[in-house]
Length: 110
Image (cartoon, rainbow, N blue to C red; front, side):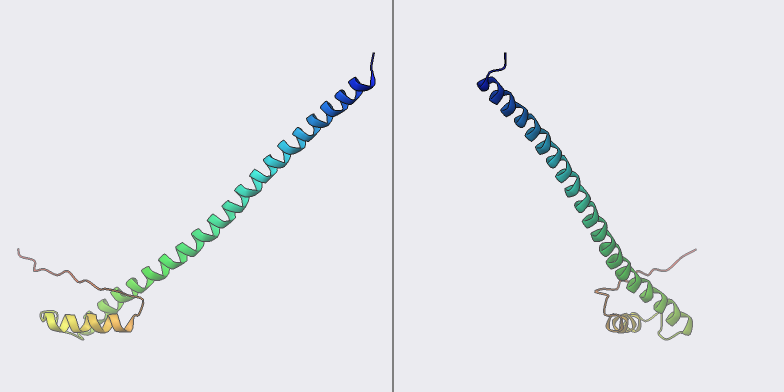
């Protein structure tokens, strides 16, 4: 027989089950939202980092192209290290994105 105290206990129990289901659904939805937001932020940051790296590498590529062009035009004496150093210094000044230039050279013997 369903008495008033049993009815209230059953109603409270049913409400507790419903509240647990709603809370579980809310937590699961919030977790998915956090993951989606984090993924969007990660993709955006990766794009910015990739663009910055490409810009830095482009400055280096430009310096190499300029050096090769200057070699073809014989704008400096390749046998004179001071002349090469002056050219590299002017390249550093001209391309502000560069922080250093290094040239490794050697003589080939047969």
